[in-house]
Length: 101
Image (cartoon, one colour):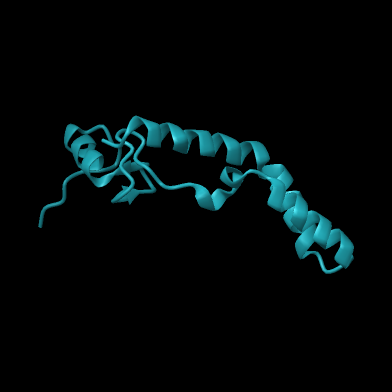
């Protein structure tokens, strides 16, 4: 189980990413557009740099929704391998069953 502070910090980052997503997208479009002038690009990049660091999508880490574990994370289910195994054995994951051959 991950520390509560780490899990809460991750949730705070997720909320901040969602809050600033439109602003970041607009500024990045200005910067990458070939039709904008150099002054506008410099101004947009300065505005982008002034945004909070935690509003960047790359600061997010995939974590298990149940335990907060950062390693062995299955994106499709949103949980770690340990929780996945436990839920699969209980039959709580639809379409998942133990293989045998």
